[in-house]
Amino acid sequence: NGGTPGAANNSTMGKTVPVLNVPTPTPIVYGTPLQLTATATESGNPVPGIYSFNPPLGTVLNAGAQQPIQVIFTPSNQNTYAGVNKTVYIDVTKAPLTITAVNKVKQLNTPNPAFEATYSGFVNGDTPASLDVPASFSTTATTTSAVGDYPISVFGAQDANYTIQFVDGILTITNKIIPTIAWPVPAAITYGTALSNTCLSLIHISFMVLFR
Image (tube, rainbow, N blue to C red):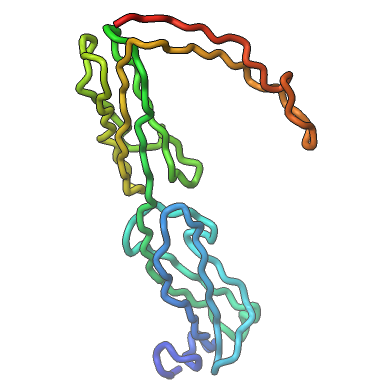
């Protein structure tokens, strides 16, 4: 049977091939579930049937350009209409992630504390452990550094799904009073219960006095 290629009246094994219309996907950011629409028509009229997508709708794709999405249309009336499929491509850009070094305070003539960071921007259930390369830290301060403020540099983290921005912190060396605060985890309360001293009980503050 003849017919114009790609037209609704094109026939396969005596069946009419609908036109499968799939809009070109707009780029999405990593973490955004895949969403796509499609319509099958004959002479401008909708053809009933089922659409399936590979990968399935709702999938969170890794970052990357020109990722293929196959759209498969199965008509309800398979005696009259043939199934048809089409492949479109979508760009998934990296999500922004900010890693900030936590400010620290230490006493004069003591080793540097362990450094840590806060993370803002993780999506799709990702955590610091998900990074391809974890963050590293450095500082110019040493055990014998004088009283003052020193930079805590955070750097080196890498991941294929994130564009990472680093924000440095500050290490403060002091010989003044440094409080040590122990605060218990508040017990669970029912919504509507007012906070009380029982919920937030500061149990211990101790001071260590250092002299210049």
